[in-house]
Length: 345
Ligand SMILES: *[C@@H]1O[C@H](CO)[C@@H](O)[C@H](O)[C@H]1NC(C)=O
Ligand SMILES: CC(=O)N[C@H]1CO[C@H](CO)[C@@H](O)[C@@H]1O
Image 1 (spheres, protein in one colour):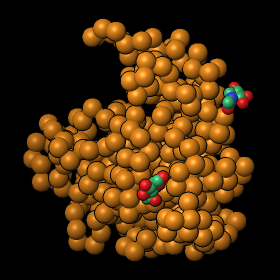
Image 2 (cartoon, protein in one colour):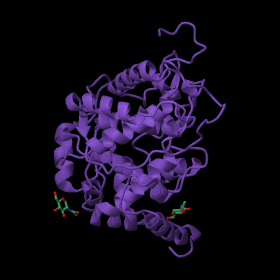
Image 3 (cartoon, helix red, strand yellow):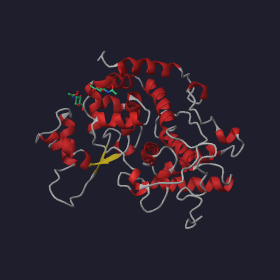
Image 4 (cartoon, helix red, strand yellow):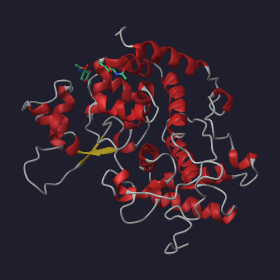
């Protein structure tokens, strides 16, 4: 492992990131500030002092009756940031928009974003961007689900284009090498990948993404040898072999331990260690390459380290290709650009 200069980088970087942090997650100084974004942008610029409180309140109301909102928002934010950047293009409603791509889902999340936007337009018209709403609402929802809270820098503006073709998200069944390449292409690193994959402690996936691990791993005709046999037997019951077209494609919990509670839990990392990860990309974190196992060990041993890493990685992800200043616009309706005359407002 010593031959790869990256290994030398990862842990000192982690140590640095952690030491930058002081006890309070709300302390902005403890996170390296993204170049273009600001702490409490709407308060500082006096354009909507209570924007963050309005958002949190709406998320709370929604979360009370639909806990699936937390993994859905996380997924939506990730999908937005990894495509053209965190510009809320994922929210645009139009034929061939990112939203219509099959990798995208989570209508509940779109409904909540719309609700928040309506409230904000009443209180502070034209002030708060859809991309900031998405970043802030995600932070609040995953916090309600049990994840550590973290500071979100703001001042993003909304993109004015969206195409289905630009959606090139990795499928949940890719190898970690492909997954890492995808993260690196966005300027993120191994630690960000291991941290952000922790989102797989909540939510569900379709059987089609795991049947190869259950029955025919890498065309061997056998299951993935790295899957715990107790888990294997359980998942085989939930996901029968896929033998015919049009067969139903059930949903399974990504973390059977927390399952329908949709709680955010550090057990994601201990389950990787006991070979109980549901998705192949998660289980591959335990193969030791690129020091991923070391990071997994650290997170499994202490939620505190994970808390700090989550803040850093969410901040880094939330800063991918952001639009600021005079770029983009503040959409009045998150589903359409302001120039769209067919838009219902
Ligand atoms: C398989 O999972 C069980 C818990 O369900 C755990 O006790 C055991 O150590 C795991 N086996 C391996 C090989 O990791
Ligand atoms: C980014 C990175 O460090 N990738 C390396 C991960 O480890 C494999 C070998 O195990 C290398 O081939 C990659 O270059």
